[in-house]
Image 1 (cartoon, rainbow, N blue to C red):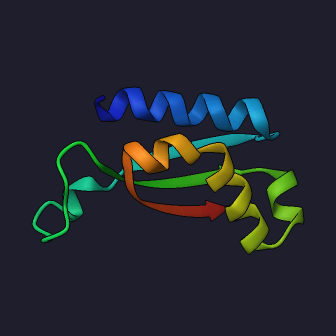
Image 2: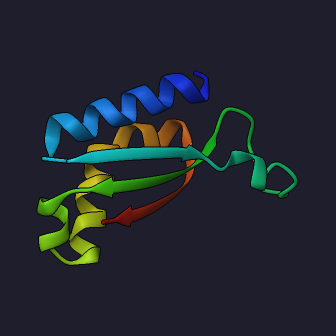
Length: 86
């Protein structure tokens, strides 16, 4: 899987499961390529989600919601994820 496919899947899954006004996803993998733990085919992504629903719940709960939605992708394709709720 390439990063563009992953971004499309992540956006689709989040939009299908929670109400979002806007989702931005940035590939931050390039920042970690020199790290000893970097694995080919695993990505580092940054999510910026504008969602009234997520904003109403705690940061921990909103992160749990996102992790549950992206469970499969986190196990297979995502090495690191940064979540910003706006």
